[in-house]
Image (cartoon, rainbow, N blue to C red; front, side, top):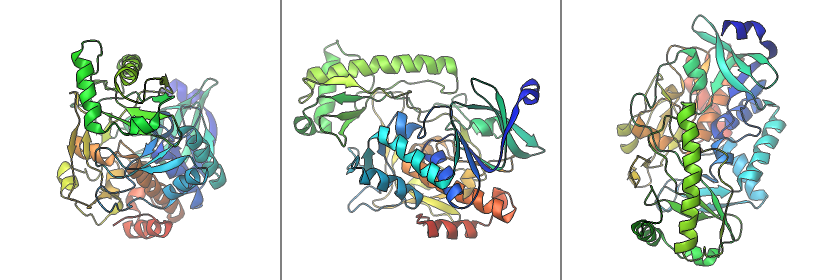
Length: 431
């Protein structure tokens, strides 16, 4: 990257740089800016939100499963939900598989909400730009190199938050990680919505009936349905149902050739699943396929090694941690390569802590990693990757970055007590 480094134009010097504006990165940037830091955010698409606006329409993880549900995500994420509720484009929806109530919303309006919150906080946004390398001084990351249609850019920062989803910044910086090359990663899903649905009739078709109809359609030999279960759910709009059905397995999402094949296969499957709904499921007789996800949904790619690695044992034992910066009650939800999904649940109503150490990568200073690429094993990751927890991690990273800049220390050396106290004042649930 020597030539690119020489050609790169200095763009910004900022306190905090966030790479990626998914639910984790968007929350991180908004939090850090509201906490007084100068913040820049680089995003490869032309809008904020990542999976929350281009793949899914539900925030899971805000509530624990069970009765009564307990809210375990708060603070800055509440501003997002409140803004959606005020616009009457969101609702609280019970989860089909007992994963806790979800906040279902209109992803198009969420794009606007994310941007308005970022603008109000003073975040500098840069769209259509891809980070391709990092700048380091010894073991400290001091900036990134990025490219767009026009030129190469250099952006410097005191603290960098990797919210790329694939741990791109961490990988460029030499942080150790696991990926599809080390073992199976979860399958990918292209989501879509169905319009002109008789929603009253469709809602009466419960999970077991839907899955029985899938088996019947598969047995006919006319429908290739790799995933023999899945869900279709209500949205804030009459006549519109959203799906989570397709399954593209054994893909390395960091390989562009494989990812291209996955995109094509995901859309092919979406058309087949839409035909199945129309032909077999009551309420869908006059429905039409619409709103394919902007890109295929990636559940798992790289997972970094941090100061601590969250494990399956931690999750199922509902373990507490002294450095917890968020809580999670979501079950392990493993979308493996088979036709079903493996679910493993925590004890009723309980949660586990997400350690701050899971956001602090090994070997590199000045960097925090948030979202689905945090330090966790494959099974723990299948629980902690819920968007509610990604938002909570982003809030913690944003607060940490702002406090670190203010205190003149790296995030690794920031007082955990100070961070937890600040998060609680923001409304976060840390214990």
